[in-house]
Image 1 (cartoon, rainbow, N blue to C red):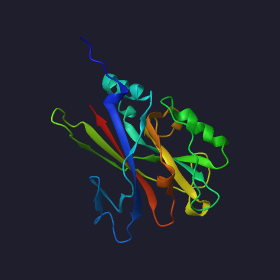
Image 2: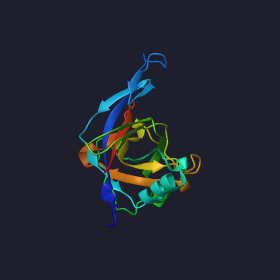
Image 3: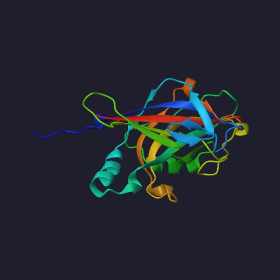
Image 4: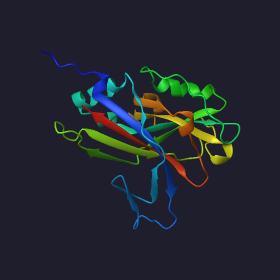
Length: 211
């Protein structure tokens, strides 16, 4: 009898954080965030949200398991944003299915208001859930940074930038986004979309469970 592994064998969920740079915290007195010493701190600001595992997850896993190629590890996230006309304006999210790949993010170059930021992982942890498993849950954390998106659009409070979705990504080449592979993606409901504030960054906590 042959075992069958479906995309249901990998499940993910995401929740946003508001993340502050503490003026009194230095590298010597940093607070631990997900097991990593960092002068940033924050807390979740909504419940967990579901994500969608893409077809590209298979290409990521086969390279890791078959070749041991560490370039295919999850290196960071995409945070998709729109510069809305006025604070509080909702973003209408696009359709999302398992074919999502970097081509979609490349196409944002043609948008007048949408872009994405490509951010490295801040930290990750590994844990065990369930009596029959060992080290089967990995949690990633990344935060917004910078003042513009990959395609050059402003990302700041003055531009009314709102993060409304994201992707968990293998950065095959840190310097070449065209080689990126997307493991999973999601979009927030309107009430959970996150404005970029002048006093904080937007963080994402992304949990994957393998069963």
